[in-house]
Length: 126
Image (tube, rainbow, N blue to C red; front, side, top):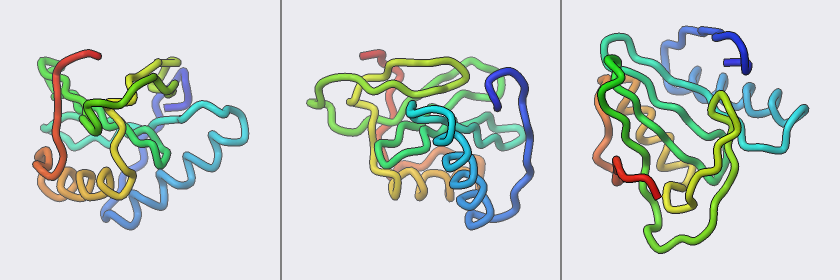
């Protein structure tokens, strides 16, 4: 998404996805210091929005929009970080996970359309 319109780019592998996410992050960093995000959609399953930074947040939304879950990192974390999820959004630092963990989740997601159990997910708002 470029802020106003959706741009869909099909990918066939994790390497291709990571390459595209890095390209989006590099492009976004030329016009904003806010952590930019991208959606990784799997037809029939929903989408995971990815905050493109080492301080990564994942947000899952089911295809029918009935369920929303967010990654849960350090539950004792304090403060907030601003991300761009189609709009500027201040998110609790409790949601932050390392980017390498996010990559593991994305690999499961694109290969199966299922959420990975390798991280905690929450439906609670902090």
